[in-house]
Structures are given as structure tokens and as C-alpha cells.
Image (cartoon, rainbow, N blue to C red):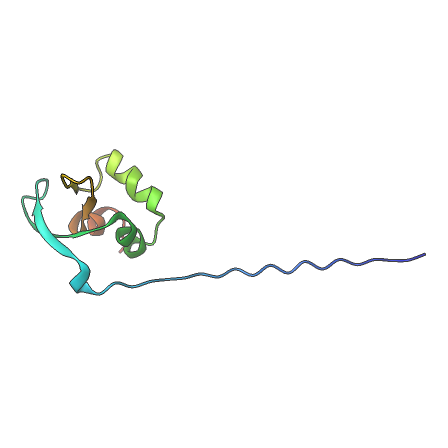
Length: 88
């Protein structure tokens, strides 16, 4: 009788990226009423430690502020990210 063994090895790789402060643009947030750093949804997700879908969900729910340019580019308000998504 032949006994066969099977071993399965799984590797998980986590990649974190940081962006310098210079990559942030500043704009007037219509919701906050003042100048705020504006980030791309992907950058906001990295900062908050959530997935990009969570950022879009928070935008749809009105929990974080956003601006959309004439070309369709979406940026989110850093102040509202800090208030709503980043745990203390």
C-alpha cells in the first residue's frame, strides 16, 4: 500500500506604500468651508488602513467629503478622512 502525502504552502505578501506630503493638493472643501489637503481615493485608503471600496462607500454615505474635477478625477478631503475613518 502506497501512502501519498500532499503539502500545500501559501505565501501572503503585504505591500504598503507611502506618499510624500508634497503629492497632496490643497483645495477649498465645500463641506468643511476651508482649505484642505485633497487625496486620491487610493491614497486615502492607504492612510485610513481600509480598502478603496470603503472610501467609495463612505463617499456614497456622505461620511467623507470629496471634489470631482471637470475631467472626472475624484479627490477626497483629508480632514474628513481623519474624522471619520482613522481610529484614534
